[in-house]
Length: 348
Image (cartoon, rainbow, N blue to C red; front, side):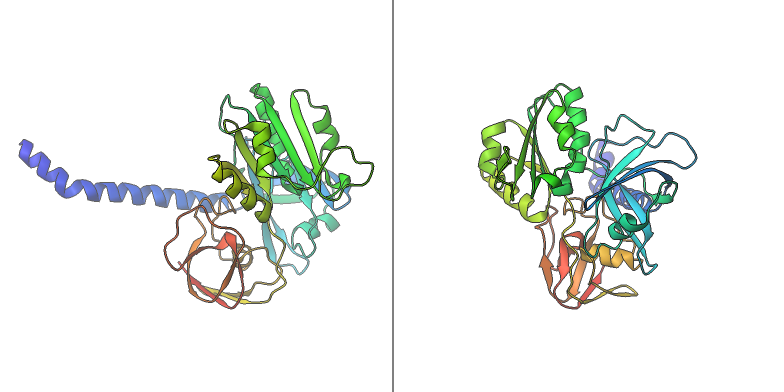
């Protein structure tokens, strides 16, 4: 009897494990696909425009409480561009996530931005917007370690939620905020007044009367503040994030990060995937271009971590905006991390 059981395990256990693994992958895939479809109808309750930034306060159209979000998560807005073509973009929740009766977004009106520009120019209080459920893996782990948050530009939005959560947990929190000018420091007055927060704004183009930090944030500065025992979180552009991540890694320190989009490419290249043929121009990544054409490729992180947008590159050359954290086989690419250099042919 024992020998029969042992033989059964030897013969069938690998197959059972494989089937279980496939089941988990399929469940995660379809759950991610579900999250990338409109699930909420939100009503714009307040609109504020400041320089190049649009602040939206959104409530449920039916007046009910909204699904809870974790600090650092985002929602995806679905809309149309100026030409009437469908487009979607992910925006972090900029708020204390204890509140479930509203979502607050801060959107930078990018030059050539197909959704951000349209919203900045046209959205009004009372408008209805379609959105996904809150999602994303860029969230704080519960810990007693000191916390160092690094933000670049509009990357400050998820950090606001993290600041509130960390202060409630009585953690020692330092927020380092890199921007070009004082006018680009979102929530500057709020951060300056928050009790318990060590706030360090840094400007790359300061005026003579600026009394705060200036220049560029470096890994050496971060380590001088938090040491090797702190937890480090960053939301910034690809260049800043990659530099800090590489330099901190040399000191044995892990940087948890999320990227906001690179600028839209002006280069016109043909993208071919399944039965879709579309142009790369005007999009921040191959992923954005294909999904705007109806590809429906899931992506939870948009920064090279989750691996859901992985495809095979059959033809063409790409511009690698960020080195992916997900292992890739030869010929594989993460479409959220690349822009097209030539015509691209991709497959599953």
